[in-house]
Length: 273
Ligand code: KIV
Image (cartoon, rainbow, N blue to C red; front, top):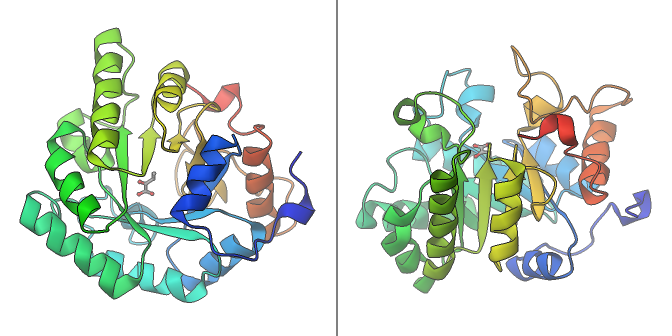
C-alpha cells in the first residue's frame, strides 16, 4: 500500500523511471499545472508527472476550448512550472495547428524543448502523426500521444463525447495506438474511453498508458488540477472527483489524489465509462 512515507521523491523522474513503473505495475500519477507554486506542490506530494496542458486555455484563460492557446503561452507556462518543479517529469502540450506539418512540428517541438526545458511534448492524433513522431524520436524529442477524446478536434468530433464505444471504432483506436508506439511515442494519454477498451490498449502497449475518464486499468491517471480542486466553474466532469472534500488544504487534496491513484481507489466505477 502507498503511504505518506512514499510521498516525497528525492530524485528526478525520468522516462526510464516511468517505463520501470509500467513494468512493475506501479501506478503513475499525472496532474496538470501551469505555474511554479502548484508545480512545487506537485513535487512535494509525490506527483510523478506534471502536464502543462493546453487545458490552460480553459482553466487559466477562461476560454471555451483549447484551440486559441499559442505556442508562446505553452512555453511561458512550462517555464513557470520548471521554475517550481523539483522532481516531477514535465510534459508540455503542443497547441492546435502547431504540428500540422512535419517542419512546423519539428520546429515548434524544438522551441518547446529548448525554451521551456520540458522533458516531453504531447500531441493529439493518430496515424497521421506517424512520420512526425518518427522524426521527433530520432532527433531525441520524447513524445506522448493522445487518443480518444481530443479536445483540439472538438468541433470535428461534434462535442466532448466518449470515444471508442463501437467495436469498429475501438479496433481502430487500438491500431492507432500500436502505430504510434511503433513510430516512437514513449507514453500515451487516453481521454474519455470506455474502461474495457483502455484496459485492452494498456495491456497491448509496452509504454505507459495514462487515462483520464478511461478507467482504473490504465498504467496511470491524469486530471486537470482545477477539476480535482473543484474550482472549475460549472458541472464537474463525470471522470473527475472533488479531492478538496474532506481535505484540510490544497496540499492535502493533492496528496489524497496521489494516494488514491497509487492504491487504485481512484478512479472508481462512478468516474468510469
Ligand atoms: O490539456 C490537458 O490538460 C490534457 C489533459 C486533459 C490530458 O490534455
